Image (cartoon, rainbow over all chains, first blue to last red; front, side, top):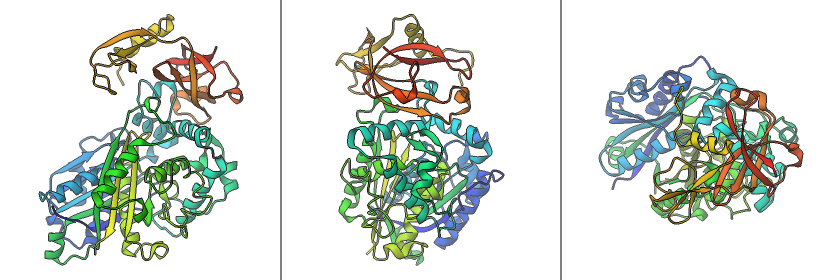
Length: 388
Length: 128
């Protein structure tokens, strides 16, 4: 089995770029990743590309070959769709492909164009990640779904909107110096609590923005890296994926994310590490409560104890395990199909020491990325380690 | 988008609720499911019988949606609830109560009404 190295990473800035096509966004991100890797484009043997709503936003299907072309890569290309963890799933399949020796150099990433649909249009489009017959027709949208989970959490384990507000404040703070982030703006707990309610108890500042953007990563086998003299200090050492019932109402636990529990355990076992080894994490905070569910599923906090981790400072830049040093989906932005790959890109930079926030995790050698789809009916977890 | 065609299974369920004859599918091992269903996702059973849905449901969790997608814009603010009806859970709009007075655990009954925005059929629960 080949070790999988991350040879290069690339991002566009996330934000509101309604005029930019996803092919142009992905061309920029993939170009940056290939340049960062220092490989020849002609060495890329396959493209795995994540995208969720391109059929609605751009009336574009069959995006694999379109994006290979945009990236200047002459290789077979496949689009992966798994709602908000589309490119997380693409990364996982790419890792397995490199491990089994079939492929030495793989370009993996994703893009999403959303703001051209407007906030209302994008909200309606995002809702197709829920069960159309049994959820969407009843008026459930994603802020509403996470609000249902937040209330269930409060009732089962306690906690408050103020606890959740600290998650948003932390992630905005982390993004202040991240030039790739959609929001580089500090906010306060009062700002969050006084913001308009979207779906009680979720407010506007508990919610990630609607974003355009792309992310890309070049994965290579360690043999290829050695032979080509490529400096690729970070390895993907663990991968896991969990699934659950599609509709939130069919879950046993409305205040937990069992698919993420499963993905985390599988990824940790795969890497031969445990939650205690994790020194930095990028998690799927599409809403503030989602970060709480994520850090509990990752085993960084006991069930019912993640709610005030941000308030206590344990997940802040100077806490025991910094969470979402990139700014997370909340402040960095959430171009859905790009998010999973962007977490891998940010975590790689953090561990390599070339991220604007690397100083907070200077000695870290192990990080984890958590990327969820829908109301966590899908989840992918990856463990990244600095190779010895 | 399914155009003018029905969603077989779902549409019959909605019609049955409207007629006060709501049902659920019970597999050979007692798991409750909503239609259409050929295999029980909990246990793999392929034997189902239609059983009457309990008249009383219990609200497990709810939210008051203030910012709605376009197809529910005129309905906002509205309450979305997940309610247990015996062995099945249903997501529905909760009507007939001030949103401030909604509580988890309250007893509700299931019916079919229409959305304010588009007039489409809508599963609704009301306090009972």
